[in-house]
Amino acid sequence: MAPASIPSTTLPRRTPGLLLGPYYPLDRTAALGSELWTGPAPSGARGLRLEGCVCSGDGTPLRDAHIEMWQADPAGRYRHPSAREGNLVLECFEGYGATQSDADGRFVFRSLVPGAYREGVTLRAPHLHLQITGRHDRLVTQLFLPGDARNGEDRWFCAIVHAERLLPDIVQDDADLLWLRWTAFLGRA
Image (cartoon, rainbow, N blue to C red):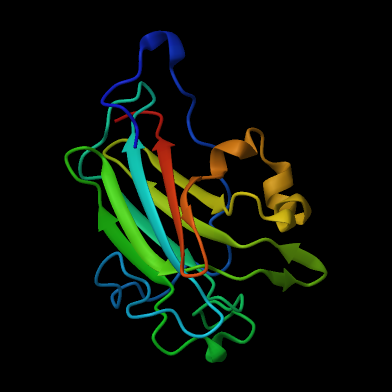
């Protein structure tokens, strides 16, 4: 996680933003928390844990930021009426969750590792959509899976300056779980 504060000589820049995407959930009332999937991962899928910290541009952790996450299921399908094969999404996979950052700016989401999919002829690498809203600032972005070879084919990953800031750190990567850690920097508290 991010330190309590970052020395002023190493001030981070704002985390790069990326488009909201076409599959932002229309009905967000069903999301009761930060678990997009509960129970063991289905055959052929892995669990995902994303630990994060929301900080201001000077590195101060932000309390009570509203964090939303949405994503495709392991087969690359979104729970959205406009999504291709949206009716085939895993039954217990919500695909959307929301939570608040704690006093130290921290949050956690539990889900399944998303799959890649095609948008026409364009390949989308596996990614997580996040929208973080603080008191004065909002960030919409996407996180990509570290080390995934498909990142180099994803037009959005390749278009962003400082795309490395959208690659979380790996805490654990095994057959059952991909555990990621990431810090988001908003422009202001």
